[in-house]
Length: 116
Image (cartoon, rainbow, N blue to C red; front, top):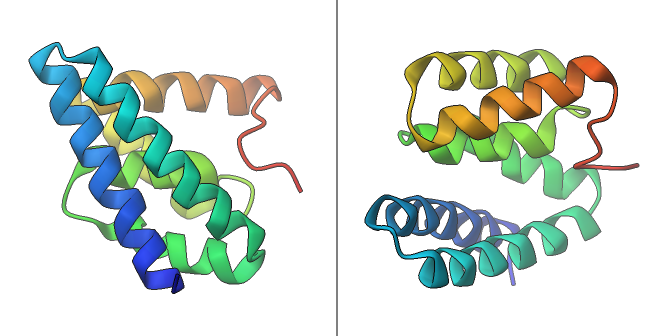
């Protein structure tokens, strides 16, 4: 699968998970989480090329997609990713919760979402 397709799969499933959470449908949300995690694993297997491909999502129209991509790009694109997470944290909603926790873990030095 091409990098662009993996990025699109990641974005679509993050958005679908958020929508499922808003509806209170955890089962569907978990299904989408597995799908975006699988896409992420394939992107990470490509090293920096996969991270570069994922970084286009830092400008995605949906906050949840931007924030999720930023969470996985903190080590690689620290300034950009941190800025995205800080904005998401202030916006509220589902994405804010993840953004707040990600930033907290980053500041504590316990963030481990994208090990080298």
